[in-house]
Length: 640
Image (cartoon, rainbow, N blue to C red):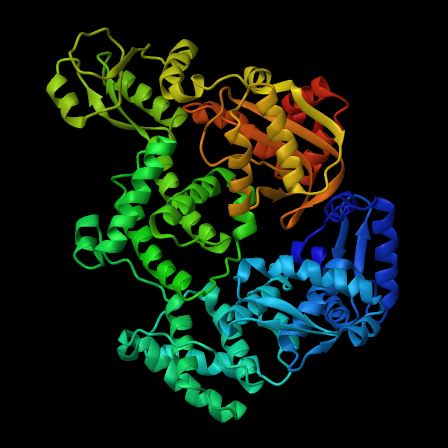
């Protein structure tokens, strides 16, 4: 239900089955059962022979989902979250025997669940632990760590719809989120304080968690030592807000909690970039952030061979972002990114650059970016790359040299303008004697109806006054220089995909077992050094390489292969990989300096794996040769 609700359009049964790892028949049976639950307004999920399935009544299905959320969990993952939330929300220790009876499982199952929960919460610090004392369990740790854990659970349970405040109301039965929202909006307006729109719900939920914890006498067990914030506008907003919250929810908010809320507000602030160049910025922002930004951009340019040192918009945008991010990381504040999954799936190259920068940032500051921060970082990098693309794709300036008369010249001018309106800008009509005038226009290309000599370093083509087919081919050959330099897709597939590192109908327990197996095979075959194995694992720990649509593309941060190749594994059944199920694994091993050689092939692969039908087409490959043919023929054979 949630999958269809998030899609908001027709979805084929095969796609749902692939996503959930079940058969088409199971999907049909489940939808029949869902439609039987409430017939008051027709079928909840409607079907179409050609288009598949779609939600018919969003209100009804939301009600069903909310009812399901309060029911006893019947699958392991849901049971873990249920127990963890109970540990976080419960005031007293929890009796294991009572808990087992409550969710209809054995005591040994609860014991196993506790072990799994302990693994789950390790990333929140060494202080937060599930403690078992006789037959009782409780959560031990710093209050700030518990709040971070709780907020992550709540945001994850929204299934990507975490900008919808209605999704959180069921967790705060004694707290009206709309009251917090109303007070906060009024104060932001009063103080003319700008917060990122995508983070306002995030801030409201964090404040609601704070109020809820205070009501249950769970107060922060630490103070912020800096007194600088006491004179800030964020602290004034926090104090005014706390006055209102105390009135509405009958609580007393300690000074340390006001400081905590002021840090939450600061972490969501938008820093307006009013500086047109790097030099103005250097006079108005701390040198520490200038140095970090310079280091990261230089590292990016060096590693990826991209010229971005003179992009002032990138420099200032990143600098402001790093300043705000630095405060968020220091105070364990999370800025949820609603487009994170789309960024990872649709722009993996840009996201990979960001993972590299996150690693460089960590080496420089000892501070770790989470995936949400990486996603915001990726937006800055993506915008910079688009600016490069715009410059490369801008219209070419053309000087037209014509000596065949006024009427013929105008006909030629009009014909070129008509054919190449989106690609060239004609700077004017010139005589072959007007070299200095042509030079002053700085054209990219000269088109001349007569041969003439000049010493300008400009491509020059002699064409007919009537612009025949041969002339058009010659012009295209100049305009399409970059396209003509692209390697043939057939050659790419033959060069980079190897049969000795192709695996079909194979099974793994988890993503790290898959990574170790495939990386080790690459090492055994002599394609990579021994260090490659750990490098891929370390990259995976930074941010999952599963893209959705049953696909993962594991790889290391740095290019360290002896030969550029792509290892392929088609699993006999999907496995859980990060937040997604995966059945197709493409492991990239790239030799230093070869990254750009993969650009066209990578673009083609993304085109295929961006939809479930494309992935399914590859998964049906009978052997290595069939897989290569499907890669090459996907567009012509499957998308008819």
